[in-house]
Length: 339
Image 1: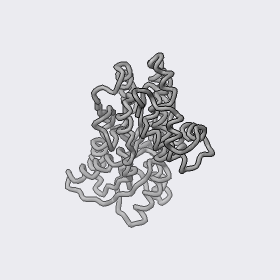
Image 2: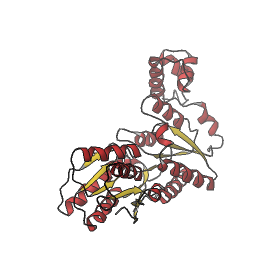
Image 3: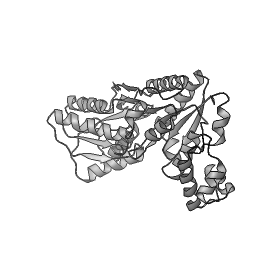
Image 4: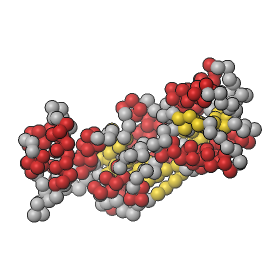
């Protein structure tokens, strides 16, 4: 908290944490040679005092930094191997350039990394933030709302969705559309390779699969889980087949997982689509290269990014969060040869 109307100082943070100013500075700036105990004490003091780094004071001169953070609470390996993230970052960077804004990429896992991230954002080193790929335990929506930093989420956050703006695709509805395509093709033993249940997209696509089957009076427990990667799709498909599942259709919650499933089916001499028809989700290039080409749901990432940037720049221009906005896009079916 401020003292008599003035901002807290680094010295006061250090005193409350029981460490030297040098140690407090190293902890705040994420440098090494700081014990876990000291780091925790410093972060606790920062929260209690409401300490803000000097970057905020510098930005008060112009009120703008000319940059926007893209926050991805994922591992480096996932970010740089998944075509969804590559496409999204490309589109965000291009859209921000049209508004004369620079992209700042922030990767943070729960714990100390998240604490440093929040401290950076409190310091107003960026004008706003776009958040994607959040998980069930993430509280970024609540934190960003409390900070008052303009932000937009790509995908509906689990916690605090009523407090922030977000754009999303109708994941459940699209999954239902995938099931209908398989049912129309005469398939009745339809499995799903679902995404991580702690991610909203994974949860909603599984929900849509269950709901559509129930609508048609079909009961199925043919569910295996992956993490949206090709290898996890192969492993999930193998687990279904090894359990003796009688399958003639699969809805995979990502094209990469569908590709992995197709690879596993091929090794077992199971033909696509003659024996098993498959529908994926994303349509970001992978679906066109599978053999046979993959029927999939086109994830409207370009429209989502454009809308997210539009909402964010409006909030920045208005000087705050504003009234939360929610925009949901409808994915389109792209028919190819896997059904």
